[in-house]
Amino acid sequence: MSGAAAGGRVRGEYAAAMLALVAGAGLLLFSAGRVWATGELAAPGPVTATRVEITGADLTGTLSGIGWAGLAAVAGLYASKGTLRRLVGLLVAAGAALALAAVWNATRPEALLAAVNAAGAAGNASAAQAPALSAAGPVMSAAGAALLLLAGAAVILRSPSWPGMGSRYDRVAAPRANRAGTPADLWKSLDAGDDPTLDAPGAGVPARPASGDGIPPAQPTGRSAEPKEKP
Image (tube, rainbow, N blue to C red; front, side):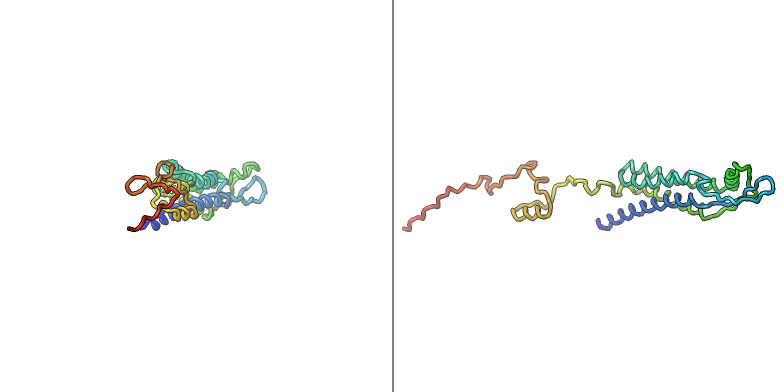
């Protein structure tokens, strides 16, 4: 695989993980505000039962918290490198597992019934029957948690080769192969935006040209030599 192809694959992995992270966090936040269950509250006496809608946030606050943490992890992954970046991935994966557990606990019948009763506690009302669960909210939350889990696993396993903030500004320590050797090359390098003083011999001090035998060339005296007389 060529260097360009390998670099494209690495950037693709990085972009896919970031996209999964944003999508997973967004699904958790969006699903937390959706209706997960509906029930009816009945009060003592001849009172009509009241319909109650229970959202994901009413059942558990874990989903919203992990969703916001997932969005914050996007900036953390971009700004970190090495071990710190893997630690961010580990936290993302742990949060995803916690979100999956929260979805499971929130959709149990006793949890739904408790949420309906809590909604009618102020009016001395209680659930008239078992709440009806809507699958859309829990499925969205589970999908978001799964995306976060995949993103966290990818960060843990593949992040050392991914780019990060400041990578494009890292200076390569290797000497430059194409160094300006003639005045024309020097002007061309300056026009291209290159600094000809980098990696120059003598730590930035220009090297003095020497003749082939190591003796500096003789300086002109300013007088031309007289022509020799012909015999």
